[in-house]
Image (tube, rainbow, N blue to C red; front, side):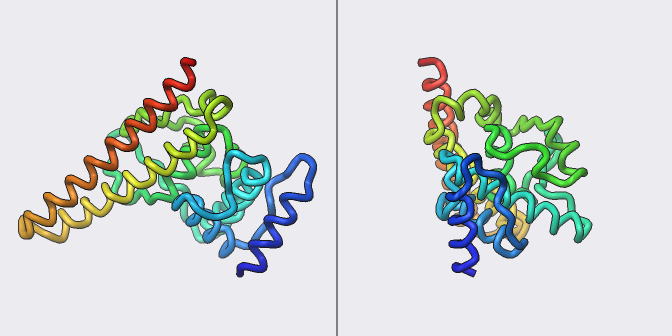
Length: 197
């Protein structure tokens, strides 16, 4: 698997104007997981990293569509967000910033992404302009938003499983959610400041 990932990176580096890197779905899932964790080869601030990320999105989206699943999970304003993963939110931020294109997704998701509004996270709107002037800050925002989604999802699972028991664990998790949200908002403020400079 690592050899395949190395080959994909090498292929991306050799291209003058990198096209999305082709890869199998299993490798794409690995690249996307690493990207959501803020690790791995898909550095959105480089053209090669964007080509790798776009290739991963294309391969994974195609595989999910063949399985009858619309991906990524896109929260609507009125829906709960407990099914949204850190990979979903990371990919949506990459899309909002212009690092991933509508054509990288399969048809059902394309329509939804075209009308993408993330009312729950106003901090990640208007990323396209920010990505041009503050890419590293947009990348930090992607990681902060991903962390917030992970903590929020854990909280939802704990509330569902606790049924009113274990109030101390729920309180600690609530504090984690608040810290993750504050980090995301602080990072978004940095991005907004960079855009105003």
